[in-house]
Length: 107
View 1 (cartoon, rainbow, N blue to C red):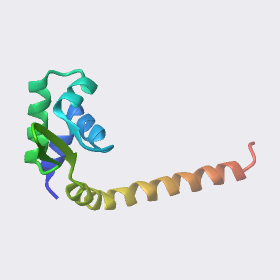
View 2 (cartoon, rainbow, N blue to C red):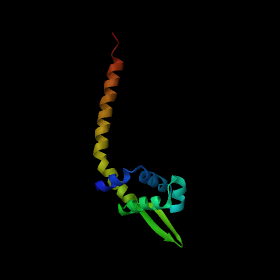
View 3 (cartoon, rainbow, N blue to C red):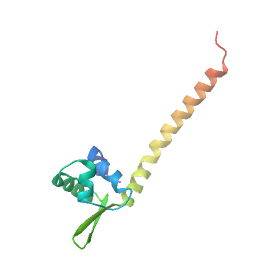
View 4 (tube, rainbow, N blue to C red):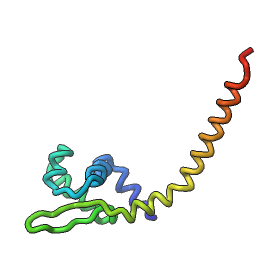
């Protein structure tokens, strides 16, 4: 998993584009409307997402349709898994601590 994916998704607009594409293919014009950005700005973000391998583009007549590529996201999820376990362990410890406090009568 490349750290580049984190950098790319660290931009809020790029993350928002990926969120919009999660529901299905979109044309640049649709993304422009939904994001409130200029067409060149959206195209630039799409190019960065494409170069990072997070987005695919296909041509349908005169239209260019963009969609999410799931493979890099699966890799990203796998990379995050050990960190997720750390948080789960910490939350389990917090829960146990809170349960002990509830079980102990107040003085």
